[in-house]
Image 1: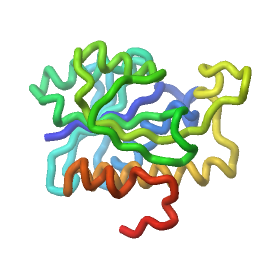
Image 2: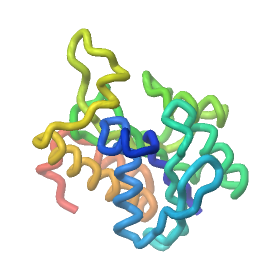
Image 3: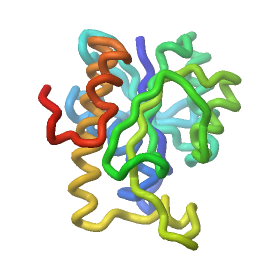
Length: 194
């Protein structure tokens, strides 16, 4: 069993913002695999189904980004899931716009959602898929930037990245995280042939 948690903020005010690409990816996975995110418990919306022959829970914390770890801790504890079964999908301002970076573990960097997860799990040994959302302009407040929406042109690029992030979840489940890292941790997806 796996838990795939996309990070974001709940509510229509945050829909489509840069900070919500994790939610967007979980929504896409749910659509692709016929999984209904219709259960509300553990401070989250979630559902479960099969992806690549594995039982997978898809989860969107409803705690707001900065407390994402509360929902994930509660969920892992209830289902007695090991941290190895956790995959977190998250936005990142420190990688190229539209790029994907898969990591097996690591620090939270400047991301409060990841900080919350590491704090509540007391561990950073979980897989994460990062989606590059661009970087703020000089002098711009980071909080305002991550809560902003994409331009029409940038939305096209980010939707491709979300598709690749969803694809990478399937590859992690089917072929392992190393294969997914080798395939998706690149700057240019134009050369990617799957």
